[in-house]
Structure formats: structure tokens, C-alpha cells
Image (cartoon, rainbow, N blue to C red; front, side, top):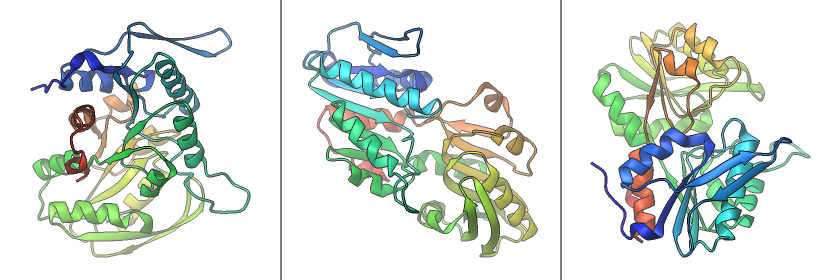
Length: 320
């Protein structure tokens, strides 16, 4: 059942090209139409945005993941924000289900950028007054902003699916690296199941050198928990390690299915039982048809957060 926002005439919902299906689902949840806007490109690739209805004095929300094509999605978001700012919108909230460049959140070696901070500065400079995002790669990214930031989690949607479709007596949650222990522990605590950790040695980006296991997965259904799955190289190696250590079955769960490069072929040909993700990033047609991939919608969580922001209510209860 949809829950309409208060003061609908002061609530404008815009969709970027990266999240059309999710935007429509959110609009249905809120009981409001998507704002009429045109996004087109000049012959040289420049993006042009025209808002085709009045937004003067309105609380506006732009839904746009900065996913593939990352730079086009980011520029589109910035240009839409500038259009709203110059059209006298009262507030501009960027709803960014997947925050691209989030992995570049610190200097890991000399002479490299902190691009997650740069993106935060760009969003603020474009006139955005609040950001809503989901399952950041690193929670400290919130500190890169000097505007309100609401950090939501897909955990309730994902754990609800797991509890309804898997035998909890056989489950064990697995962190694919030391950095993801807190995330995997949260899943394990919510589902009341054990936790294991894979010690991963990374050679360079998207390439892992070796893995070992901390914990006992023998005879269990191991579920690897991560915030995103990109090329799936680490996931497939982790699956092999878990099976070598006696896991009966292996599945994976993530908030963001980036699935770039050879991810489709690796998942298709793997020993994984299932890969569970959300619709923060739209799946390619091939992945959408792959029986091993299950995509769950986070539209209800995002819609409720947006409704509470617009009606000036607390959003903290959605942080669980």
C-alpha cells in the first residue's frame, strides 16, 4: 500500500537515467508522479536537462546512482541539481542509492586522490542540500559532507529474504575480508547465526593474492556478505576457499551488484548457489535472466526515508 507524502504540491521527484525502474517503484510507494523533465545529449555528448514543470519553493528529490556509466551518471546528477537550484527549488535532496567512487575514500599510497571527497564537494557545489544514500563502502564518507547525510542500510530487506528462504540452523555468515567484519557480524547477529572471516591478501585493485579462513564452515551453508560485488573475482576465490574448508553450499549477498567485467561469466560458471543483491544498480539483461542472481527492491526503504525528510520526521529508525 502506498503512503502519500504530505503537501504533494511541494514534493517533486525526479529520476536520473541510471535508476528509472527504481524511481518508478519509489514514486508508486509514495503515491506521487515523477516530475516531467527531459535529459538529452548534444552530438558531442554534452548533457542537457530541462525541468518541464514548476519547482519553485518545492522540496525536490533526484534519484540517481552514480553507477555505470559512472561519469555520465555523476554529471547528469550535478546538472539536474543545478537546474533545480536555478529554478528556485526550496531544497534539493540527492537520493544516491549507490555512491560511486566510494572505494577511493582514503590515501592508500602517495600521490593518489581521495575521489569520494571530491564527489562530495561537487555535489555540494551543485546546490544539493541533503544526500540520502545506502550502504556506503566506508561509513566515514558521511564526514566528507557539510550538509545533512542520511545513511540507510539494505540489511532488513536482505536478511528478511535469507530468513524466509534458508535454514538458519545450517547458516554461517562470512566476511570476505577484515574490513567487512562489522557488516557480516551485523547480518550474523540479526539472523542469530555464527560468523567466519576470510583473510584476504590483495595484490592490487581487483586482484587478490591469497586467502585463508578463520572459523568453521564444515557442513554449513556459507553466505558471503559484502557491500558490493564488482568483477566477482574475490567472490569466486572466496567460494573455492569455503568449499575447500568443507562448506556444504555457498551463496553471496550484497547491497550493490556492480557486476562489471567478467562478473557474469564468473557467477554463471561458479559453484555459488545464489547471489542476492538489491536494485540500487540496475542489472544488465543477461544478469537479470541468470537464475543464480536474485534482485530485491529497496524502494520501500528509500521511499519512507524521503517521506520522512519531506515531512520533517526522524529518519533514524531506518538506520537499522
